[in-house]
Image (cartoon, rainbow, N blue to C red; front, side, top):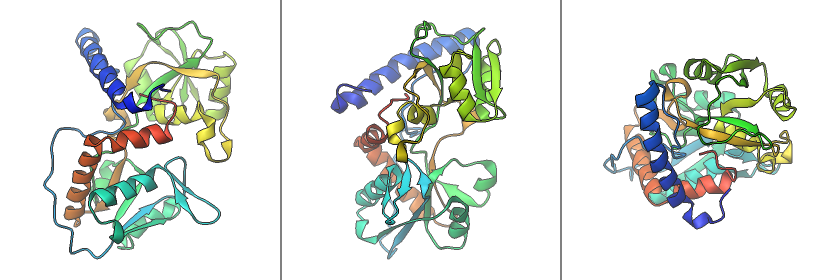
Length: 297
C-alpha cells in the first residue's frame, strides 16, 4: 500500500488537497457530487469541544460486537481484538480513564437493547446513525467514513486519469445505497445489479463486467484476504481500485460513530474531545494503517 508508513498521513493529506481542487472543478463543470479522497475519519469541522468533567463516573462501559473483522473479533478463548478495541483503549488513555474502562462484546442483536437497559454506556460497533436511531440515542462525531469506489481487474487498460464509468458495464449489489448512488451520479453507466457479492466478484474476475462499484472499505478487505479471520474471503488479488472516492453522505451516511443514551451528554462531549485529539496526534491514521493495508482512500 505504502512504501513509507511514517509518511503516510502526509501523503494522504497532499493527495486530499490535490483531489479537492479537482473535485471543485468537477462540481462546477457537471453538478455531480465530487469524487475525492476523504480521510478515513470525519471531523466535520475544526471545532474543539470543551472537555467535560467525567471524574464522577466510577466506570465507563463500552460494548462492541463479536464478529465484524477487522473491527472486532472474539477468539475461542474469549479474547477481544480489532480496530474498535484499540480505538476504545486509545480513547480511555486520552481521557485518562483507563482504570475505569470496561470492554464487553455481544452479538449484534443484543447491542441496542443493552444500551437502552443501561447495561452499557457506549456502543462502538460500526454504527451509522439514521433518523430512527437519532430519536432515542445520541451519537458522537464520525471516527471512520465509508466512501464508495470503483474496482476493475489489474489487467484492465482503463486508467485513473480522466476515468469515467460511462458506457461501461458496472456490477453493483441490487437494492443497495451504492446502486442508487451509481444510477444517480452515473446514469450513462450500464448498471448490472447482483443479489449478493460472490457472483459479483466472480464476474468481475472473469471479465463479464468491466467494473464493480461498492463500499470501499469492504472492497479493500476483499483485495487483501489475509486481513479476514480465517482467510475465507474470495481472492481479490485480481483487482484494483480505479478513479477517486465518493463519500456521498446523502446516500452512504456520515460514517461510523459511537452511540450513547441522550442523557449522557457529558460522555458524548468527552468522546468528541478525545476523537479530535486522537486525530490531531495521528492515532487515527495509525489505526487505519494497521488494519487496512489496502488503502481505500
